[in-house]
Structure formats: C-alpha cells, structure tokens
View (cartoon, rainbow, N blue to C red):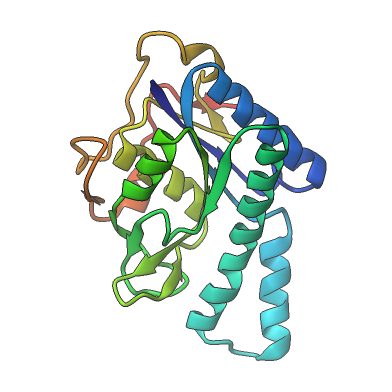
Length: 223
C-alpha cells in the first residue's frame, strides 16, 4: 500500500468548514488505497494571537514557555482535524510532535530535527488509522517541548516523509499528484538520506531545514 504524507497550512485549516474539507480529502485519499499521514499547522492567526498574549503577560517571555504555548496551536488544529475525519466514519488519531517520535536539539523557538523514530505512526497506520501529526514541533532529549521556527510544519512533513519512506508528499503550497496515484505503480520516493526502511530510528541530516527549502523533489509543484 502506498504511503502518502500530506501537509496543510494555517489557511487550509483556518475555519471549521475548511477543516471538514481537509478531512474529506484525507478520507478520499485513504479510500483510494493509500496509507495517510497528515501534518497540520495551527489555524490561521492563532500563532500570532498566542505570541501577542505572551507579550501581554511579559515583555520578554522565556523561550521555553513560548514553545509550550505556541505548540498548542498545532495541537488544537490536529485534534479538530482528527475529530472531523472520525465524524466521516473513518479512523483518525492526532499526535503531538513528541508522540510522533520527532527528536530535536534543545534550542527553544528554533530547534532542528535530530532524529525521528516513527514506530508509533507505523503501528497506527497498520491499524488503518489516518495519522494526524501536529507540525512545527518536537521534543528534545531532555523531554522539553521545542518548536522549529518559521516553516516548521513544512519541515515536519518533509522529515516525516523521509523517515517513513513515503511514496509521495503533498502540501497546500506544493502539491504532488496524489489522488490518482494511490492505486498505480510507485511514482516517486521522498527519502531522508538517513532512511533505509519503514522501521527503526532515522537520523536527520545536519542543517536539514536548509536542505529542504533549497531543493524540493521534482514531483512537487505549486498548488
């Protein structure tokens, strides 16, 4: 079965109706014969509102507390998306970055992905769940919540696709031909240079964020 990673930005999940539209697309993709992982950003405007609230509490909030606060935007959006999928009769579960196995360095507000251990995602996919992952975040080796900075959800999608050895990755900004490809022969592979299989721990290359922004797989194109 082909494995598809889809990423949805804040505008795509910006209203309840748009979240329901995303849920329908996820269910349709699964019904076409794909295993589906979705990476979800916070709803449009939520992150900015949380930053504003933080600065109302303190002129210089600590970066650790900012990470804990900002990560809740993606938590909420991914949980709502899972609810919408379940309401359509499919099975979905939302995971935080930590639950998805995303390990980062300890730098708050601009962490880099160090390793990904996708075992829990793989087990859920084997049980026919659509797995909804909160983008933009991970967990340090010390157990601290971290965020990846601007473009963090895009980076989450790319890194997970590599760790899971996904067949195709699509985004609300750069979309690969997903829907019609699920029941065909494999079109393309998006692989992290540290990925060898769909099991075990995967090491992200150094400066992975810079690599992902500079070079996209040929299958990706503008939505």
